Length: 256
Image (cartoon, rainbow, N blue to C red; front, side):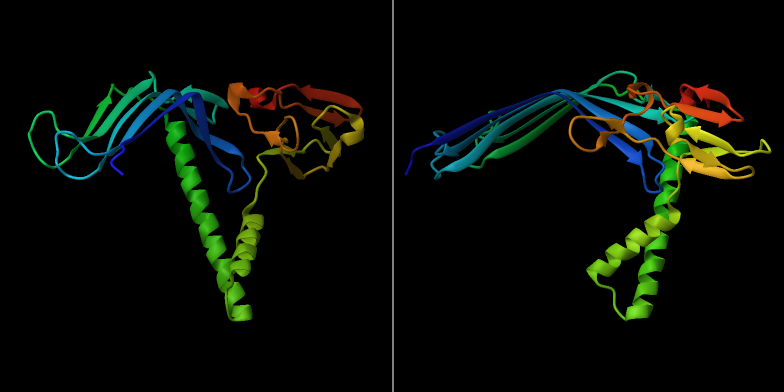
């Protein structure tokens, strides 16, 4: 059939955000986030004969994409988000395949036009330190996984998919750490609670260190939502109990 087929599509997304965290050692430490704003994409496909050409049906298209990008990095020294891109980075992409308007030819031409506005970047040494720490964490995890798999192979003689999964789990459990801790050098046993209630307090004996972590912010349904820095909806409350005295830290990140 010589009937031409034309398909048109349009996608609009007001805002999409992706956050990258370092959770290989259970640190739950944010690294950076990228926000795509005002994403608009339009595509037109044509599958039919072209009037300027005697050749059979050809597939041509016209694509237009426009968006602006924002990025932030997490400053671990202040537990706050800082701007990685000082201004929105606007990008426009145009791609097309069809009859060239500049040259007379029996062949279709493909063109790609990328327009990028200036990209203003700013960061501190803390961002580089966080990236380096994440890289070292991945190296440790990879080495531990390989060592666990090698040990499994020596014991069983082979390494199956389930064995690799068990080795990875074992390696993760070996290097897991908790980001917060209570260290007691008061000379007596102390207690602490993460919700302020005495019935949920935990003991920290004299001369010991007790590690802990906060659960993600509750949401509808199961699980929780990880929020960092100024996005956190709940303060990280820690209450210490020492000899009947209650010491409350309303926001442990701010106190640090």
